[in-house]
Image (tube, rainbow, N blue to C red; front, side):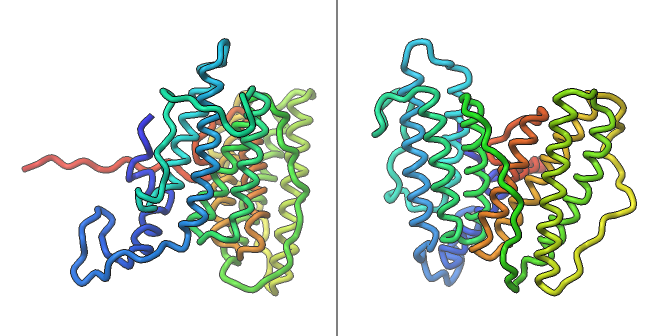
Length: 325
């Protein structure tokens, strides 16, 4: 699979980050700007290099398992391709001489833990996710957002490899801290209000079976997250955004199929909200938003939403084409 295109990096917020770390020495297309001072150190480079090294360990494990007889080739190749996309995004902007060569499927190697199995690979995915979250406080906002997204993808990979789904974390209220995060917090609260309303519609169109029980569980989780954001906003001395009297659904919900589609839509929308909140939150509170991102992505997957390499980060818009005169 080809590495992410420049449009993808724009969607990930990486072009601005890269040009900032070069002291405006080049424009986004790589042309040298007049009066440029030359490249400067990238404060995110240590975090990026750690993330790349962890991703290389994953790639080596995938390559070794792909070479084993009876491997679930299609699934493993899909997950490996996404992991390669993660590496390209995490390495973007680091001088090429600082980054080890990308592992290739033509030269499988054995990772430090020994010959992997799907179960051990799932464990490695989870461990890698935790390492990315541990670096959230050391990263600048755009990279923190990317790390949270990739950690969420690691959790989805672990589930695809057969690991039990990560249990949703109880909603917690961070210690109030002043800052510019209030608008993003209010947006997250408003999104939770909408999700709670939407799940009321979802539950009304599901049969009284496990699906309805899952909808009740999700409904309760969103109520708890709403309450946590309300307490935090109140603690900041602001008034929490109220719920609207009603919400317009994105499409008619008339049966079980459209009800599950609505649930997937609600959770997917929230992943974007929480990825943005990771970047807006003060560093001690980023894990709270990253955990909410992961939980929403896992619920979206449960309801049938397609997985993406970068949960919570929208796909880049197509670039308009022009016809030469």
